[in-house]
Length: 72
Image: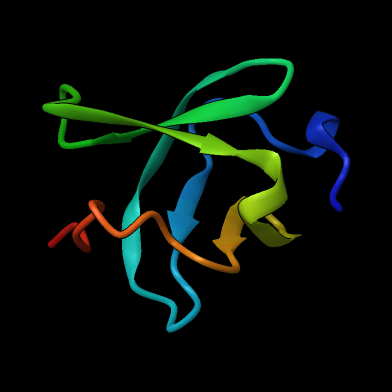
């Protein structure tokens, strides 16, 4: 599991294929909120155990929530 302290608001969130899902809009103790759109049209709660890795300013999810479509 990753260190939740490595995740910050504004980071880009991607799925396992590298597609952009959105950005981190809020950080909590057990999860973070993934926001889509600007301003955020939708928010999704993502638990830290779904994070595969943090690389620079990007968060890569091991298994993206099925209801989250890629952001165009």
